[in-house]
Image (cartoon, rainbow, N blue to C red):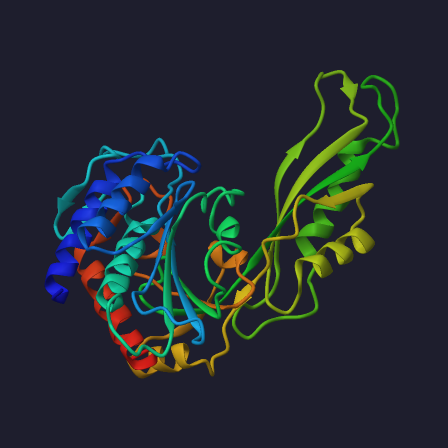
Length: 355
């Protein structure tokens, strides 16, 4: 199929995806739209829950396998929208709609790229594409659930909006719940162990703490207190204050190491990680995918945002059309030219690596 036709078909698919609600764990209808693409292009596919996947026609288990992945779920629209988030509106070269930028443009561009290479013989890599569910919620039925079902993956391209630059590393995430205790009392009486006042020094500790190891690609670990909760009555000093701490982890630490440090050093009564599974991700700058991307003029950088890369244990590259700063914003959009560019760059990149 000619690239021009692929590009137009991909844009039409994206318009249909925008106009079909697909909140995390509710992606059944967008999965059907993706299935129709594969049927139309005579590509055998499989569906596992709301994940739709396929392999290239001449799959050979003796070759390494490259995963192409992006997601078709969305967050819920925020209250700032002035346009209908479920209507695909084209104005001034922009395609508006919920999920257009994150990550619909990436998804349809990768689907088009997979279709371009699907029937080619003698590829150096097998191709597997997974249009995955539950990325926005880090759900249990998303890409992580597919890794035992699809063929073993050696390297991956994860489609997220990067302006088609090469995100060679991505920060991991650990969310902590912490408790600061004090002595409960009536507000009218003296109390030298007020849990809320005790929290002042704890908050300062979190604000000022610096993890020792930095990363060339991802910089420092970033730790942010994002929630605080205490007390129910105006005249009662509460027994405890609860904090939530968001920690974005660079590739110099594992999530387990971060948890051990905070349990040992933080001045909280107790602190516990909700999960340690969303680790940082990276790919060697010497990998042929990265080298090929640099050769065609793409820049490398480290990404502060989390994606389905966190589910992968292999090397992975985050790369896709669109701009991450538009994700989850009101009146979300992607430029039509970005989708065209995305498909062309994906194809050019893979031509240098797998053909």
